[in-house]
Amino acid sequence: MNPPPNLLSAFSDAFNKLPKLVARAPGRVNLLGEHVDYNDGWVLPVAIDLAAWIAASPCSSNLIRVHALDLGETVAFQIDDLEDKVDVRGKPLPAWSYYSAGVAWALQQHGLHVGGLDAVLTSTIPVGAGLSSSAAIEVVFAVAWQAISGWQVDQMTLAQICLRAENAYVGVKCGLMDQFASLHGVAGSALLFDCRTLEWEPVPLPQGVALVIADSGVRRILGDSAYNERRAACEQATRILAERLPGVRALRDVSIEA
Image (cartoon, rainbow, N blue to C red; front, side):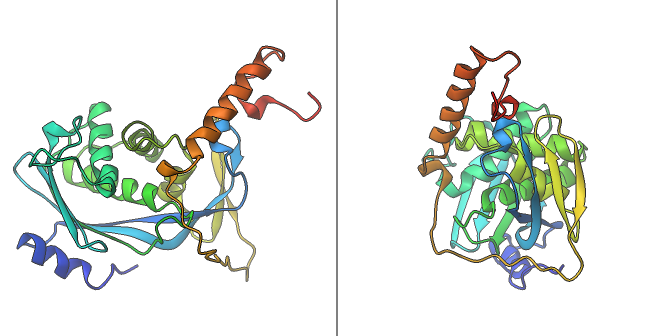
């Protein structure tokens, strides 16, 4: 799949050099199991053709510079300042940059080297449409740092690192489904994913069937929604049920009969 036509020229314009790599991470649509991943259940996502893209190149300094092509904004921040969430001027990072900064922070927390980076980011995934635009951005930066820095981790570990970025840095208490689907997509298949055991298998879609994604026009930002409240309510329900039912670790363990 070819990158957006203006991505490479935008990188050259922003940084006066050519990128060393181009990376892509798809969004996803989910066929089964909403609010189920963080309850240890089964989900059935499908990676889609809409994706986040970056053109990137390492730089010798301790600096990360990201130009958001779709917003027309650029941010620069030091790797040493990731914990403080401030840019090179000491001002708070813009919210859109939390996803790249959060991945850098989470990679460091995992003991992996994160070097300076120049990147131009663009995406064909509608923001706030429930297609995991944020997870795709996390994944595409993680993939880029892996390629540039030379270390290797398996895809599930990389998905978990991206999840940590979203949970602990961005502040959205989502489950693993979105990052998993972006990294593990299989052409022509959905992904049956057990969110407790992390086992998964591709489920081929029937021949001649096409997935149609309809835009409702309703936009949401998970960090500003009741998403975290819903997760907290599920965890509270689990604690209450666990006091009365043996072996309950998550809502997955509760049957209708119980």
